[in-house]
Image (cartoon, rainbow, N blue to C red; front, side, top):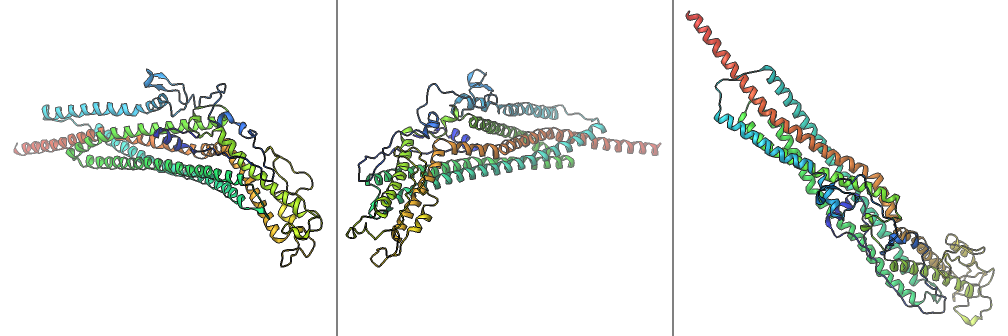
Amino acid sequence: MFCFGSNPLARFLFLLSFFILATLFSSSRGTSHNHGLHRPHFPEYNEVVEWNTRRIVAETSTNSTYVILAAKRTYRKDPSNNMKYYTGGWNITNSHYLYSVAYSGVGPLIFAGIWLVFFGVFMLCLCFRHCCCRRKSYGYSRTAYAVSLILLLLFTTATIVGVGFLYAGQAKFQNSIVNIVSYILHQADTVVENLKHLLDNLEAAKGVGVGQISLPHEFKGEIDNMGVTINQLADTFHNVTGKNSDEIRNFLNPLRLAVIYVAAAVLVLALLGLLFSILGKKWVVYCLVIVGWILVAGTFVMSGMFLLVHNVVADTCVAMDEWRQNTNSNSALEEIIPKVDNTTAQEIFKVTKGVTFSLVSVVNYAIANVSNANNLPPDAQPLYFNQSGILMPTYCNPYNSDLTDRKCVPGEVDFTNASRIWKKYICEVSSSDICITTGRLTPDRYTQLASSVNVSYGLYTGMPFVVELIDSTFLTETLKDISENNCPSLRKYTQWVYVGFITSSTALMFSLIFWVAYVRERRHRAYTKRADRQFSHEEEASYIQG
């Protein structure tokens, strides 16, 4: 059966950067009986399935090669294994990989903790000094005042730039996610549409025939069983992709709002801090410093989270690209990619090819034994309709009786020209549906033959997609599209968000320090000016009195 990870985080990480093809095949079997027409024997046909059977089927050969995906990129310390380096490559079902990639984002979190402790101690020291060691006189330096103001303006500008980078990055990141989810749903719709089209042709095959000649009843039963299987397959594709896309949206929407709110808070706080510092509102500035102290820690935590997201996205993109180059080998991706059990894969081929073969056989039987018959008595109606003239060409069967591919022989018509060529053999008929001109087909029989051609052609052309689905060609092409068209933007914009958080949080951190420094220098400057004015007034008064 199809198997895919039960870990919700694993499902999210895989679908975040790539397409999950997860569905359920159920085997269908039917008994065979001979109903006059030759029913092909269904062998264990492996011409297509064995292209990649070891990878497709649930059983895996013990001698197959195992490829470690993204080995260099995932070479990180593993805190769950005594800080040894993880060497298992990309594998979201492996707890050691998850611990190692989570550890890659711990740096900003550690810095956030250090910031909380040390800046908290720094503020306590300032409060203690202000309350217990107040000095009566101040020193004033024009250089310190100018430098603190310049640096305050510089770091406020850097904070604004970082916030702008953060906003742009998260918006483009969200657009990239929307594009991937839309592509996933489009691919799922493609799968469902093709499978439904195949099922429609199988269902139509039950009702087509030429005269009283149609498919045997056991084929119709097998078509019914296969209809259940294909409906399950289509429904599961639709439900799984829809469910996982909803999970991604449910995860990303709160994350997007958190990024926007944090970025807005950083921007507002930086501007307010600059404004009140310039105005000299020291108690307001001190309150803003306390808020900023906590906010800086929060932004560093958010930067660590996006560093983790960036690393997971980059790991997965590299893993997908390496898997596409080694699709014949086992890897961790095999634990997530849907797998088809061999029995079900064989049944799909047997039923679809068997119906196609028998439908063409029905047409050829009707042509050979009815339309091209010259010795039928007039009382053999409806088999007799006064058919005459040049013999009709038979229909090229694309398969042999063992369901191997067959080439057309000279004198046969194929899917592309059968209806057009047979149209030349239509006769004019009387009210009793008897030919009154030379011809091998009545209009009704031609319509029946044309319907059989359309259905058999639909089944035949639907097989390549089923082959691509089973041998993972469809999945490989999907991963290729995601790897080439979506991965670069995802990696780029998650890095933008991470850099935006680091830039804005670092700039805000220094802004807090220079808020305090500038307010202090401004207060010293104001005190010095008052003292100078007072001293000058005292000197002037003493001069006048003297």
